[in-house]
Image 1 (cartoon, rainbow, N blue to C red):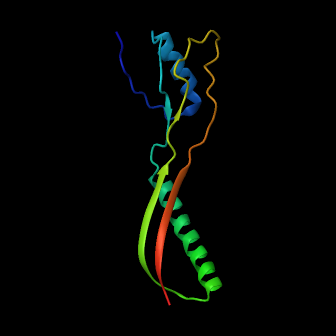
Image 2: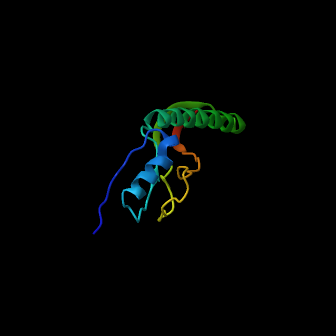
Length: 121
């Protein structure tokens, strides 16, 4: 018999204790523990703005080097993502010490790319 449970832990300092509670409650096989961002939208907006500024800067440099002037923007498209969730190991054994199971810190990244087409004069 198996059950699937989804648990959201907001305080990562308590994650080890939450894992220990699952094991002590009888869970003997856990997998696909995922870390992600609760709300990536603000970071995606920041990344999007940075990508546009970078595109404009590069286009200005290229236009000057080519001896042309950038006209109005004809098209903008974007791509990007929030980095895939970080997965922990597929199996976690019961802890034998009195301390909570240690959980290593990590990082999440948000990336955006833009493609901008200008009219050239």
